[in-house]
Image (tube, rainbow, N blue to C red):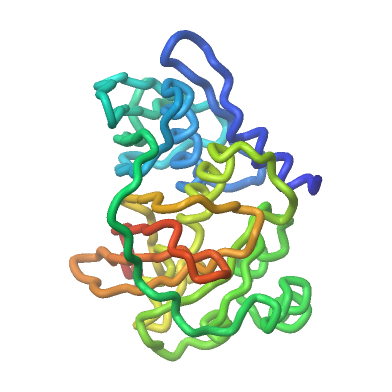
Length: 285
């Protein structure tokens, strides 16, 4: 198993401290704040470990303060309700005695019912796109320093953007972004692991897509960007170590905030998850 994926699984494997109380660590990467997807994934793991026999179908979280990567994060779970069909949990992430993130998550017993879904966009498959190694070889020398530093790191999630010119041009683009994502190595079969990994990955590019119509990126030193809230719905089973198409669009920006949405599809066209997020995108120039 690659060291990046092993580290991600270690980060998502929270330490139980007491009933409903867990401790999570952050990777030692030199980042000034904790990656939002890490907090989402860890909070989902904390909630899931207080539920038996039911899978999460939705989560809604709010970021309150930047996370400090130098100290652990404490996750406190409130067992709000255990009903016949649904279970509700609230999770608060705490550092330095203050809440940095709160999340509500809902779990459901398996049920049959009506079914329909949006069609998958007609875009090139991951095999038709350059690999990360090929992208790095061609594009890294052209990237600004913050972007180059990010892509040079070994990461647990491989990305193959369809609109790769997004990272090499400052021209405003259409408010859409398609990127194939998957874990860079095989994951355990436990569905909870795959849900936590997708929760982690769902925050990687979503905020950045809100800047596409403006020809900017979150790597721009003149842009102040931060996730404000994040919602994720799980629709159908999937594996996060197999290619998933993350189809994103950004219908609105205003008031120094950008709103983005995403649909996540398996390669066979099955819709497995939906995502929505609003984030701070403040122009410092």
